[in-house]
Length: 184
Ligand SMILES: C[S@@+](CC[C@H](N)C(=O)[O-])C[C@H]1O[C@@H](n2cnc3c(N)ncnc32)[C@H](O)[C@@H]1O
Image (tube, rainbow, N blue to C red; front, top):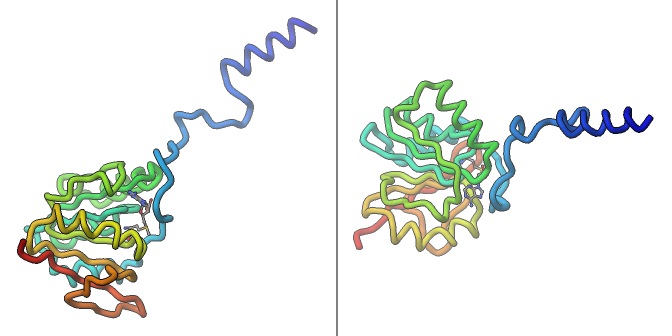
């Protein structure tokens, strides 16, 4: 009996608890709680955001909290733009990398796991946002400090508080806003 118990304990130690998934097969948890949950932008709204920002092949499109990467992937696929996709959630990063591979835009789109508030934004010529009103307002000083004059910012659904949009359009009942970083 003692030998059987010892053998079972040894088996569990080596193979893990029956039915449990090994840690390496799971996606890791985010390093901290995301500031907003994942809700993907519908494709017609993605298209409207890129059109409103007037994206071309000369642009570098940063999506801050990029989810499955659909905005930078579409910018690369449709316009030949470069894209930068940052998300704090490893599950989203896995999806974004799969999306980049599926659309064959790995040469144009970079995917980074991290906190959007810690990223250097100076390389962007277009920034896309689908966050929350409070996060847009919190992000505003960083956008003003790091982005070059002329950089376009588009946000769907949520505005930027007191900073009035240059332009706004309605897509399927949703607002899409555009701001342009002014000369310093
Ligand atoms: C509403 S979803 C938008 C996803 C994508 N931009 C789109 O429009 O389809 C917000 C995303 O922000 C990510 N997120 C939340 N807080 C973040 C943070 N501090 N840094 C980076 N990503 C964050 C979430 O994991 C989620 O994927």
